[in-house]
Image (cartoon, rainbow, N blue to C red; front, side, top):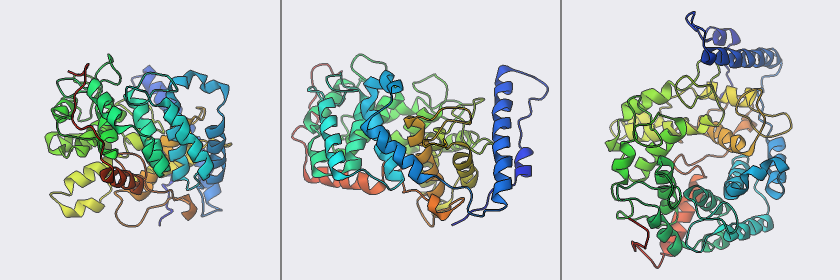
Length: 410
């Protein structure tokens, strides 16, 4: 356990230098830094009298999340096609906070997700909506978090594998839905789902690793598709997808590490998603979770690196706990932004990664020991034991259809 924080005056020295060239980007960066510095200065004064600071307001966040699970505000009407995502984000955040809903609520959640399952396989954004790899990933993760026989048995894995074939292209890429664009998120979601449900086969993912590697850019990160710009969410999908296929040797790991390290902001302590962009709480996971994966890759040649944390854990925790908590619950992108379910989930996920590092050894906690969150599996973003339990269950209950291509697949 550790509760040291960076000195405010040391942080000031890391302020952005526009080198006498003013741009919209530099003005935005300076504005965010000024807000963060103000928060850090206020925090330093309070922390001088209370060594337990900063404190993660777990109860407040948990109470709000449980309210959201049962009833959402009207502002979420625009996410009607993302309802499995909302379920997953809420359940995962509650697991991180170690305050899961009761068994009856979880059973009702399984029943709702069953209504989102499409007759042709996969899950749509809501009942009677067309299947999509993103909402399929979210639904499977949510069901694995619930982890009951009812949850596992609700998944039609035969039709699920058929659906995966329908969104696969001949080059190994995956579209997010039938007729949609090929996207690295599709490859990752398909792999994560297939691994958790034991529907993965080498034939289904033939050439996928080679396609993913084509998405790595000159910067070192991964883009959404070949030739595009490196991005934190895509970089996570790229390296996680390769790790799930045990083909990380195909990418330039050193270049990826250099790119990821440079995404941690010197003053704020959080991560940006792309070069010359602003800090954002959700990249605490998208960028942060890449590091334990990279550590595992590098440790194959140097066993000592498995315990090495390749980013500043303390700085990331400071940013999240002091700058990203909404007073009435929920977490935010950055100071001045409203709370939302997406940022609550992924910012807490990043905080867990920052606390537990590579997953080996004692946790590193900034602030009160009670700030510690449950661990996450960096490849799936659910608890490690939940991923194991699901795979173990489905190994004992193999699906009746394996490697059967269907009409519409290429």
